[in-house]
Length: 272
Ligand SMILES: [Ca+2]
Ligand SMILES: [Ca+2]
Image: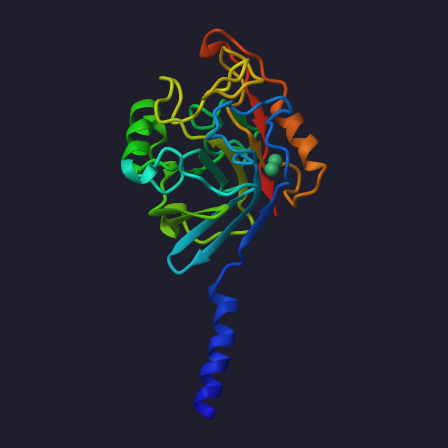
């Protein structure tokens, strides 16, 4: 009995000291229209709600950090990702930006090429976890070719899987400098996976002025519109007001014929 009790109390005491609390973030349903005007591609594969973020949890599991990204619709795999070494879903491309140090102007200001967003005014990101249906070799190749300066800031999951409405990605904690912390700033962007991206973009589906079979609409045909359907806004607790808050954050970009002339929106981090 004593042995059982000591085991039991030992077990009770350990988690309080050894485990960090999970970070739980929520997002309202139905705000998967970017700045309010973005429209889905017309192809039948792009099911309603497929790009609508509803929740994110970031938790410790042994030596890993597990990211669970929940959507408003079941994950689907119309392009049979397993056939090309992918992860069991086709449509989504999730970018989790982390401000680990909370220091002003420390880190990277611009989002990963293809997102067409910036962070700011003076809080930048230190790491980004790219959660894609593509095999890591493909993501690494794209980053190496289009954004080699981000090599040490991009973190790829050791395992990514589709579980009904949730994408689960596992990252070694060492790649993030440790376990999840309440002090982290977090922003989660929902993009669409594009296996044949434009030369400026890393695996991101284009947003144009008019939607097409495989193109979002409601943006512009030049450069500068965020290629982001949904993100976290306000305190990220899922309140309806976070929809309009998101629209405001993603508005105000200017389009240009050349990438250099574009004025990008500036996004904040969520801090718990
Ligand atoms: Ca949402
Ligand atoms: Ca949102």
